[in-house]
Image (cartoon, rainbow, N blue to C red; front, side, top):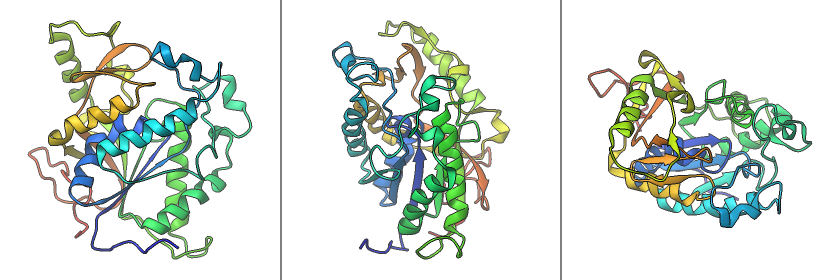
Length: 300
């Protein structure tokens, strides 16, 4: 039987679709809160079996060859979490319970057992167990479009939001109900993305990427006014980069820039941004009145 959570601690739950999503989106935030003694829990919904493999020497892992990429990515995720100082990381329903669905419109979307085809309440039930066990005050996940339209990201959003509702319902399932005080969706302000790409273009040095991505390649870009929280975790930027490097089948990192399998460079953001969609905002810590702490206003 697991120990009840320490209610003196801040408790943060993040729900992501594939290994590597957490490091790209929230790596600096996770490292910051873990270093400050918060209880950080990551739930990853699939093993990322359908991912494209960057290193030629590992190409045999891919789904169209040996189909063992998911097993390999379990190890990558563990290495990334070690870099971030996060000790509680889990797969929804256990490793391999839900398979990567591939990009939207791919034949893999229809495969039995893929996450996109999972029954919503069944998958949410797996997450309810985690929520009632760790009792987070704060949940972070994707927006309704999953940031960029990937079916697993959309489903992760749906599962996270449904599980938050079910976990708070005394009539649902076993265990003590728990209400999550604040729910945030990942996002990036448009001005920050544009400035990041300006820095990339102005770097004036060669880097091992084929080209430069655009703002359209960055998930969750919003008009600045819609962004409600900014977590400045610059002190943990190298830990974020190290976690991203641990996902070597999926990410190539070069200094303050990175690329996915499309080999197009993007900036690595050490300040990470969020939109509060449920709960009461705390006092903003900066001139722009955005929250500078996801736990602002909660008294923990």
